[in-house]
Image 1 (cartoon, one colour):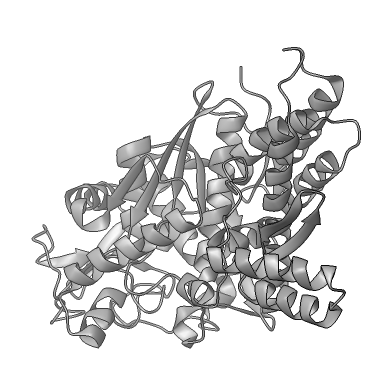
Image 2: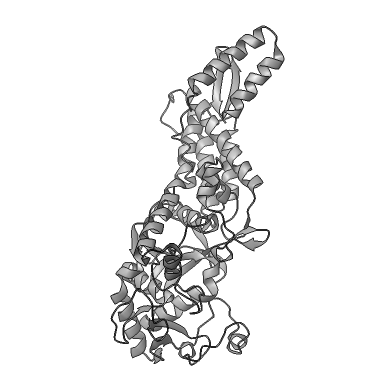
Length: 468
C-alpha cells in the first residue's frame, strides 16, 4: 500500500490527498516541449518539477505510467490561433525541413534532461504520429454539436460548453467583449478555438494531412487531448504543465476532452511556476533567454541548476540570478565533498537493525515531500541529518541514498575527483615552502591550485587535493 501523498490541485485550488483511479497506480500526462528551438532554463524548471513528482510518487510506492507529448506541428506563435506555426518559423530561420528541426531539437531537449538527471517518461509521443486520433476526437465533438466548420477550418464552439473557463477562473464576459482577444471573423465567438486548420488559414503550411474537412493540420490543443486519451484513457489521474498553460491550453483541453467523452478529463491538475528575471518570466518569444549550454560554458555543473530549482516550492515564482546559482553550486560541492569524507570514514554496520535516528530522519523527509513536494523543508532535513552527531558515517550514507532517490543529485555515486599530476607536484612544492616558512610562496601555490579547481587540505599524512 503506497504512502499517502498530498498535492495542490489547480482544479479546486487546494491541497488534497491523491486518490488514484486504480489503487497503487498513477497515470500522469505532462505537456512536453514544442521542438522549434533550444529549451531555456525556465522551460527546464517545469520538467525538473515533473521529475520530482514522478520520483516522489515512486518513492511513496506508486507505479507511475508517465506520458509526455512532443509538439512538432500546430503550435502557433500565439496560443489563441494567431501567427505562424512555430515549427515553420524555425524551418525558415534555419533553412531546413520542419521534420529535421523537430528531430534535432527533440534530441537536444532529451540531452538537457539527461544532464539534469530527469527521468525519461515511459511514453514519449509525437503529435505528427497521432493525426488520426485527433481527427477521430474532432469528429466526436462534431457529432455532439460542439464543433463547427467555418472558412474551411473546424472550431470548438465555446458557447455550447457551459463550464468553459471555470478551471482558469476566466471572466468570459470581458473576454467576449474583446478586451483581450482579437476577433477572428471566421469564428462564431472570440473564445472559440481551432481544432483543425486547412489551407484557407495557412495556404503554404508544409505539414498537411488528409481529413474529412480538407487537407490541413491540427490545432495545438487537440493534440494533447488525443494523446492523453490514447495512452491513459478518457479519465486519468494527474495532468501537469506550466502555470501559463492554465488560461488557454489547459482550459481548452478540458473543454474538448470532457465535451467529447462526457467524463472528467484529469482528476488532479498541477502547474509549475515561472522562472523570473527582474520579475519577468523567461520566454523564447522575447529573445532573452538562457539555455543549459550557457551554464555549462560558464563552468557550472547542470546538477547545480537542478539543486537551484529544488530550493523553492514548485508552484511559486523562482527568481533567477547568477549569484543564486553560485550558491547552489557551492552547496552541491560541499555535499559531494561530504560524501567523499563519509565514504572514507564509514565502517560496516554492526547490526542490520536501523537506528531510531535513521528512522526519524526518513520519516521527516517523507513528511515534507509527501506534503505537496515541499522541497525547501526536505532539503533542510537533508542538511540536518548530515550535520547530526547522533548518526554514524554509514548511516548518513544510507540516508543520502534514501533522500537522493527523490532529489536526483547523484550524491551517493559521487567519488573523489583525482587531481592531475601537475597539481600534485604543486602541492608538494607548497609543503616544501611551508617547511621553509615561506608563507607567501605557500599561499601563491595554494591559489594556483585553487585556480585549477582544487582545494588543498593539510592532513597528518600529507596534503590532500579536493575538487572545488
